[in-house]
Image 1 (cartoon, one colour):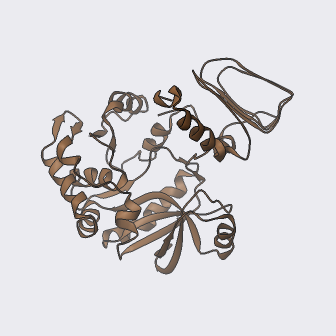
Image 2 (tube, rainbow, N blue to C red):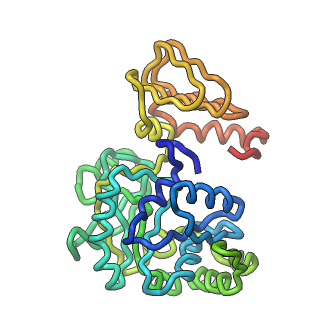
Length: 328
């Protein structure tokens, strides 16, 4: 729900990818604490009719998607998108969806494989198999996040895509797969929605029933186990903005390759990402830095090594620092 790469928030940009007669009003599965903010943000971009399914507890992606699948008609085609991704070429994405629809109508579960541009170690990969449709291939295997040498081998092979976590299937096909491979999740979703409290466009699944659901991702619970799983490779300018380095790459930059947000002064400074949520940040004579100032903390990292932020988090955990108990 933050504006990271554009004036619109990540949620707003995601929802606007489903504009037009081709798509029904979106279903948003989210934390109940965020309901008012989601309503306001979607209304601001002309989407006042989204339905919100408000999770009473976090159970990972497979049960969350099941709530939406239960709410939809069994033959409805569900486009499942995380709300924190960047897709620069929406037309290419829509074209890939079009290629996937005939297979979806035949009962296949579809994932979209992102064309890799570097040997990234922070993404899972999909190994593509035989061609089964126009620009659609059977999934040979899903591969965990690799080390650098393995990622370089995947890139050179030409038959691997990044796993972007975007899916297309009918509600009925998804629930049938969930009933086969994770029946506890399917039962919890159905029963929680049957006992849900409804308040206009807000649906509140029964907390006790949904709380009994096992917690697992759609990849582990369904996609890696089902037989009829296919991948549509697509080059659409995708990023999950999973690091500060990724944000620097995506954000608008000045003539010195600096990306600024908030009150920032940069003098003789180059190749930096500098963001402030309050205090003035003045950078003089520096380069290749990431500087993030929030209300109660400042993070400084060398650009190109932003995954190391986890070391700072681990140190704060060891010290029991109060910062970790505050909302970001």
